[in-house]
Length: 250
Image 1 (cartoon, rainbow, N blue to C red):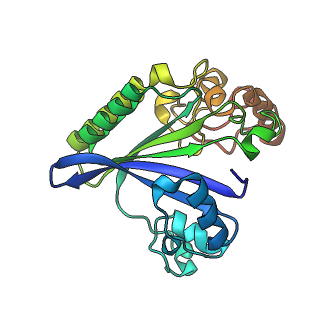
Image 2 (image 1 turned 90 degrees about the vertical axis):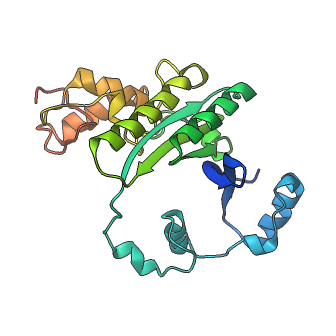
């Protein structure tokens, strides 16, 4: 596939006349015009039945509005609004190295239907990602990855009972995927912070705890980031529950 094309498959639960099922949306971001994209998809993925009318041309900044899940045509000034809807969510992520057996895909659908308010973002790798060394930037998840997946559960009902239910079910799905994803370490995407994989407490930043989540987010680049952090912010002024620690006691 051309490097100008970004693909995403997004499974989510849908209601039908026969009950709940999982439907998959295929979303693409192409740096080019609609005619070229349409010809490409028609030749490579005729099963999708893409129509030229399915393609929407927009500027780069307009695409950021689209990826923020606003309706097409929403003015870009909406990006200046920092108000977020009142929702609760649990998110986590994985990197897939080997193709998933069909039984695992069926199990994922079953778990999703049980949770209901969940969707998965699955992004295939390869292309430009394969050409950049793991050590070239802090982000190390590149060559050898088939695709990245985010599990995202959200709910609006308040209360500990609802929270416990959705968090428990999301963790159940995550645990089920353990044998089929990256390991040693089980990698994670830093932008989808998940405190389950390790977190500092009491406003402290501990190196050993930092390694728990740091190596999953950054692999061997974690120690490089620690050295940079120690030089630039030795007193650890900038910190959060999953920040890069320093080599100094804080």
